[in-house]
Image 1 (cartoon, rainbow, N blue to C red):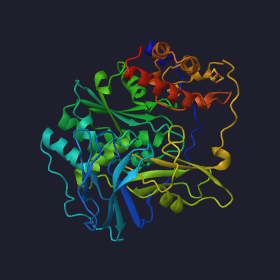
Image 2: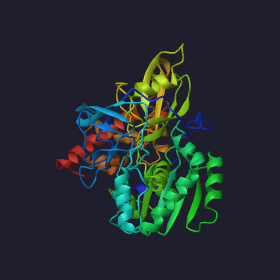
Image 3: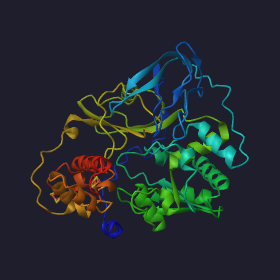
Image 4: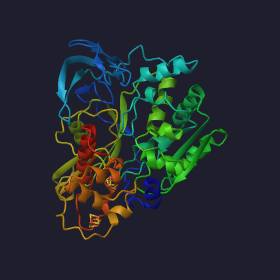
Length: 440
Ligand code: SF4
Ligand code: SF4
């Protein structure tokens, strides 16, 4: 049923608003202090391995993976540990953080050396040591992803970057294509996955051309141009568009024979294998109508959002209304600018008060646009009714758990109804009821 719905779905045509597409990443001014969270990934938090007063360098291990599904954390700066203390995350939970006062020297830790990789075991150990997680936003530890329980025949590289404003992946492709290819080849060689497809939206022709040229003599890597439709970057949709396969309900990409890696993640892997430098910084697209200098900025992990806002500046005649971490369609609003950046932060969108003020919602006119444009083929208007009635069985029939919060339904709704927020509430309610043993 879902497959039929998905094939009928259009996906929203969000504006190709990519003012920073040609902005080569530049380092932000080094902050005086960074706060590095021990939980920047899916899974168990890392355990801090440093204490107050310790000297650290760039690349020093400061947090050890706290379980199988977890990731190492490294210092992004050289300096002195000022505190190891709990910090309240945006979801309300507390997690340890390491606060480091920078010394301005950015001395690299002597342990930062290219890893010795000779076989699958040493490759996976190197990936684990690097602290690499899904940098597209998911934050799933890469070494765990590369050990699937089902047989996999394709490595899919997600280079669609369909989110409005974001161009950090685009710049990664344009400036680091050799790292991307090196990372892909290592994954194929050491995991035994026979082939790779790099999926790139057609609205990035220069990326398609460059990666086609870099892979033209490599038989098992193909570049696949994808339709420029918002939602293409969602894992399930990417798999369907590239392989024509459907991930079973509740399953993982590996259940459809694929592993999906974000293009910046595989590029970071390529860099790590060549240099031994773990994930300590990343490119963040800073844009939005309130931003004075939209740009791609190289940000040390742990710099505060306020540091980034200060570096990019605000337009003098504009009042900052909202800051969104990640893309404008899916990213959460930042409630406190002192919050630190993590490995998974690909963008910071600075919106004026005018742009951030939602229009008043009007009654639903049953036009069906939210259904027509949902990339997952869901029916928000029907879910709304089922959720209002707290009808768990109907919510299950409507596959509410497939919603990935993409924002398309709200974007296309002529009545400006908060469909996405309602879908989030309905999904949370449904999953909670299922957990409690409700009807599915
Ligand atoms: S798009 Fe908006 S107005 Fe149209 S059916 Fe959906 S919720 Fe109703
Ligand atoms: S937020 Fe959910 S329901 Fe709305 S368009 Fe996206 S996937 Fe569909």
